[in-house]
Image 1 (tube, rainbow, N blue to C red):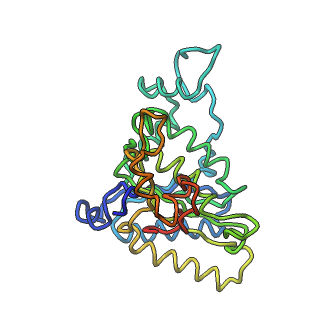
Image 2: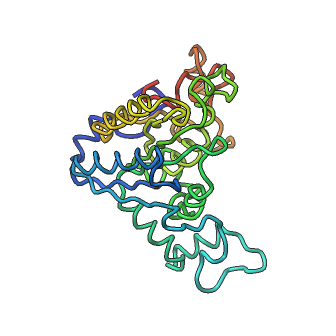
Image 3: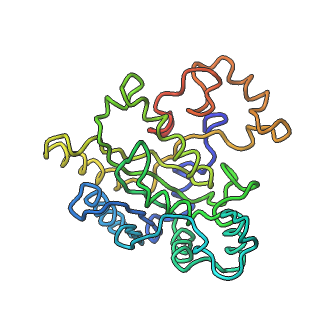
Length: 291
């Protein structure tokens, strides 16, 4: 492990601790068309992971007509305060008392069972579709998915893995540090660090399908074949690296500890995209493992 980076088991230890066969995989899928490239990527994951002995479940959000908005309808029974409704507090209490809506409870079961979650979607406005963000807002309930004490490297989902698999509307060059869209590493930081790692997941490198609508069919076939090849060894990959919780001093407003900053003083790059220490961000920190 690199100092002050990773927080999960190495890929070797993970393989030794658990067999690949029998693992549970949840694919959270958001696309309206069964003929889309996203559908093909989802189908490939179902096929290849099932062939490896995994139990694969798909939450097809559009087909499910999954409700995205966070409302009082997510709670059954009496509210703590209907006059000053606070969604996080009310749903945490409802979760503790088994009073959440049936659709949330069903997704909670899938997440609890899952060893790996794959989010498959087209990138919308430098993020995910609203229906998928709504799934995260509603399903990653406070208490169930995180608390102020259990987050990041000490998160509730520690030991589980998660990854993004998505298509873009722009070419890879446009998402570079010199490209018009800016560095994809920066784009991914709020999702991979602020959602997945925040909840304790070991985050696998994203599978990015660059601009499939704007490339020849042969190139699309190659991208899909590369994904199929990756799926053969996906369950043994090393995760991306993030700064662990114990790198921060709780007594100083969760700032990086002095000794961490001193150890990184001569480093060429910062720790991560978000914890860059005023230095250049580590190249591909959010795109490739071990960088």
